[in-house]
Image 1: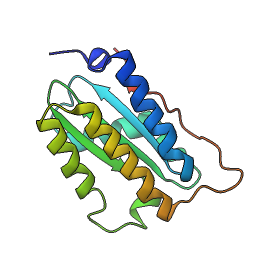
Image 2: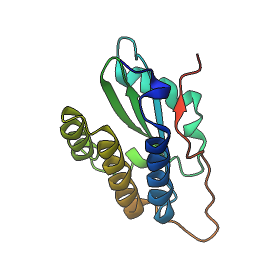
Image 3: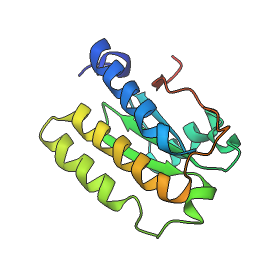
Image 4: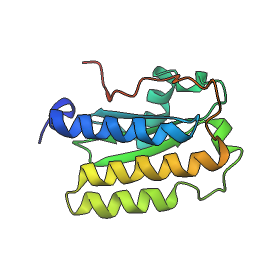
Length: 147
């Protein structure tokens, strides 16, 4: 089983980063991807912990999205900040998660992530359109657990 840092090739990582940058062009929302080997007991708790460690709660509109993958545990989560969760319907992330699962089952991890990133960006545009003067508040780079 590959390590988190080598789960995607350098080219695949760049493709994912381009998808993040493109998705953020029409929204003030911030999308991040974090990979690590294992999440421990609960994937949502671990994703929330990473969300805080990456300081994603510090965006001006509280509109950060974290896509979290634990590659060895084969688990993932999508976490949206309070600004998003106050505006979107309760099942907002369900279709995105279902598409990710369908792609992941087939081994299409890059496609599943890029679809999730693109869909997140399109949906966030409805609630958080990009305005003149918006700045990129978060890194678009993929983050990994500090070993």
